[in-house]
Image (cartoon, rainbow over all chains, first blue to last red; front, top):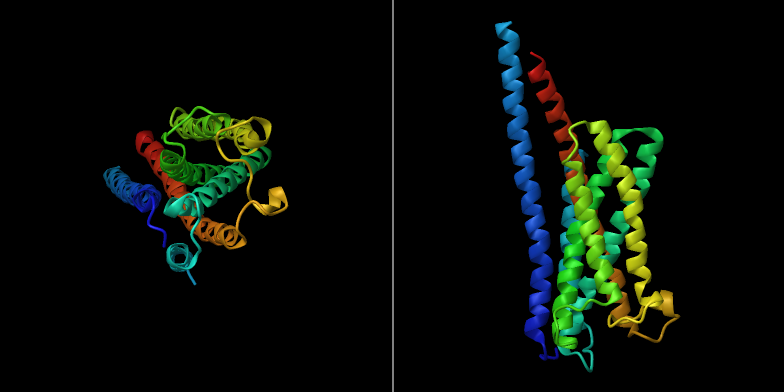
Length: 52
Length: 229
């Protein structure tokens, strides 16, 4: 392969994958937060219904 | 097969496809005489824009269907498509900027194509931020749907900018627009092979984001029930 501008080609590929990886990580973090919040609220509701 | 397994399968196929494409890009394709290795960025740059434009088109159609049917599933599809589309827009902007640094000697220029691409990205980021401004899910979906339909005009202008104005950004090279002769057929094929691989990845991300939007609605309903006690 022609080695001219190879470093910037690498930067381009790395930037593309880094942006997508970062987005996937935000999706994973959001899913975890949502699951945890839903579980907490469900527990709160169950407790409130029991104390009624 | 469960929905979860289908998503894993699609993600796996997309990953294998993208790795195979990387191999072809780096080791099998011929070199470009003037640009050196940097021209290979094109194989991510162009398909990323195609992917985000497809996402924004899908979001506009889904928004129209939401306004017509008031079915929240369409709103869920719209927000998921826009968010994934914005991620691919950022890939398109970043890869284009890195390519420009070598070929033009600058990271950025305010020519019509680049400026409209940035405006498109900002408009769809605005769409995502606007959704956060509404507490009522119905108002949120209705206002977001209207904006999403109008926002698509920015996609059309971005796409046509190279035809309507003289730009520093290169003109059309793909044979579907030029009739051929502007790009090596092997290089053009690589663009068409990487696009569906990225589309498959985008489809997985949209499905995951749709599930999260459904969870968000469930969370909001639970909050309302908790406050009602």
